[in-house]
Amino acid sequence: LLSRICLTASEASRAKLNALFPIVYSSYAMSPTNRGFDALALLLEKAHARGIKVHAWFVNLRYGYGGEVKNELLKGNPDAFVCYPGGGPTRQFLSPASPDVRAHLKHEMLGCLKKYDVDGLHFDYIRYERMRRDLLGHDRHTREGFKAATGADTMDAVLDELPLSYRFQGN
Image 1 (cartoon, helix red, strand yellow):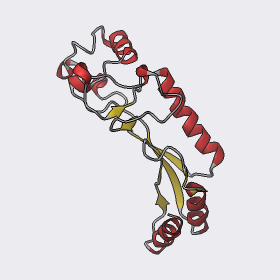
Image 2 (cartoon, one colour):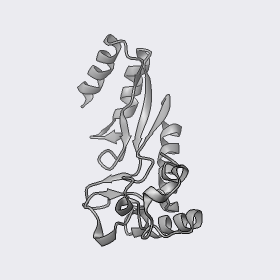
Image 3 (cartoon, helix red, strand yellow):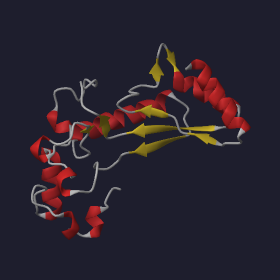
Image 4 (tube, one colour):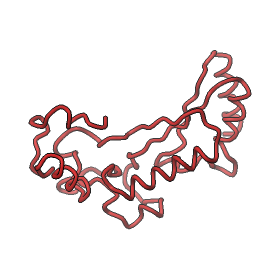
């Protein structure tokens, strides 16, 4: 991995790229510090030395495909995850309506900005998984927010009947 990071910066420079977007936060890369060294710090050093900007890419709400919840703030907190009728798919998706999730993501992003000299943050998956009624999200926080905004329950909502301004809000 160490040699790949050095090679990436070198190849990006030869290709005349002006920015890199490494994934620094996701269910499979929970920390830029991996395998005994700080990969993001090394990439920043190598890329900045070549005049290449580095934007930290956060895969925010997609949490993986089942398995153990690794994060202590989210472990044992069912309201942190989107719920689907009938149990839903095996993949996990964090609920953007959960105050705990928003606080966790804010903590991770601010921590990255304080620790690293990144040139920007890229926010990926700042939305519900899909815009289908059965995948809208039926966790407590989503249902309460949806009802306050529309007067309807997500369990009864038909997305095609909602105003476009609500269907695409936040996407």
